[in-house]
Amino acid sequence: MVEQATAPTEERIWQLLEEVSDPEVPVLSILDLGIVRAVRVEADGQVHVTITPTYSGCPAMNTIATEIRLRLLAEGHTKLQIHNQLSPAWTTAWMSEAGKQKLEAYGIAPPKDATGHVLNLFGQEEAIKCPHCGSNHTKLISQFGSTACKAHHQCLDCLEPFDYFKCH
Image (cartoon, rainbow, N blue to C red; front, side):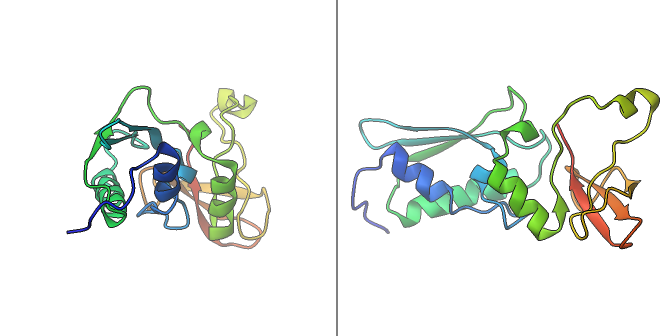
């Protein structure tokens, strides 16, 4: 059993959470993804971490909760609770700019700002920039990519397929 060396602080817990990766997109931390809603440390050392899934049926949330627990336990923080919060619903606006850049470098098109693009009024999709060559000459292949939070696209210039992290 790991002995707790020092009393936890909110700042230190946030630092430790930065080290927890998203199991579906391992280049992103759970902080990059924006799913950690709150950290609270009580006077007795009890740590509370509140997380919100990217969508209510996200199968990765149990793994994420386990990884948070393991990371905090490894630091000796044995009194902890992880809370799931469904409301307000997660949005891609909560993702960090660094996270969006990491997605693109990894080959996944980051979410665009949810602007209600005029093409949507006519049942057309706004062009998604290819993370491989930067072209906007792309097409939607499937609304569902490797995970439910991604759509599958193809670049019509470099011909490479890629996932797009959908806006919510």
